[in-house]
Length: 190
Image (cartoon, rainbow, N blue to C red):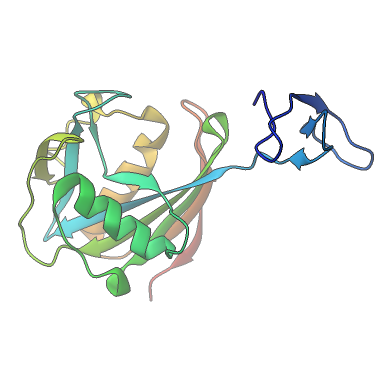
């Protein structure tokens, strides 16, 4: 950040009294600008024992496989955002009210909170978009994990496929840092 979004004057990073993190403060109007993590949502959309994946058509990681994901917009719930991103990127549809929480993850390096849901596809209809050069359903033994766009969440993908094969789902929480993931179960389906 270089300039205040309120008055346009330059900002500087300072440690304010009683705060634990340096913040951007305006040199002109003294407004403090907090920078907090963004909320990233994703939906593991299923059809039987398969999960819908997309090959990225845009950067970052163009050509690699990932789950349809994106950021929550103002005025929408987490589930609505995950369903919207799924549709925008793959033209696939799920019912946001059928979504179940799969994981809450901290992507510290990217300054993001990662909320992953699961939901059955309403039908096995999907297509490519500007953001997805290929869209496919993969069973666990078919998924090209070696060609996955974001290695920090690969453990989460494997957990989900394990749960899908067992048809018994957990709710997980963790910190996802490539090579140093810590994931724990915080709940189980009865």
